[in-house]
Image (cartoon, rainbow, N blue to C red; front, side, top):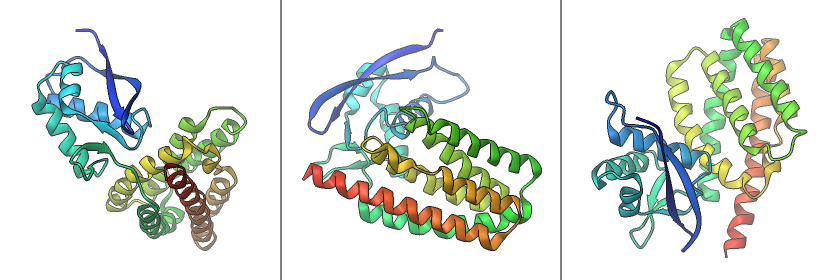
Length: 247
């Protein structure tokens, strides 16, 4: 059965602003339908294809995807558990929008966890992992000269930090950071749509990488903290600007 490309219209900020095309693969017998719908919606949310604040209407999703409302509802519940979908005061389902206060708390968690990760990475990173980190840094440096690179830069940023977490050798730390990364991705997509310069990470990533490669934990921790604090300032400033525009 061929892949079905289905146009799904999302009610965004009170009006029909755009039509979005989501790809739902043909039914895979080894995986439940709600799981496939969940992954399709989740990917579209984290990529920014479905913007923060967009309204999700079960009946329309069901009609457009040509499935019953039950798997749609189950998929949305899973997204709610991950706090990627929330309910507004009127009871409408919407893609979550991260506030400045939420962003502050997310960065607090991330800074604490990533300092643990980078300290362990300085001791446990393998040669292959170091090469992967360097390759990601080089790609980001090359990409910065190109226009319209926000999506790719977001991916490189995620890969850089996840590789450091994996290099720590601590599976629980990777798991905890993954939960934070999901929310951070939503936040970063939300802010980079308005201001791509929020992702100015090249110099900071290279400093972090070089400290890990030299197994200098003290310098690496300081570089990571400085990087995340600078990122926090850029992102929260943009969140406040966006809120001001909405007001």
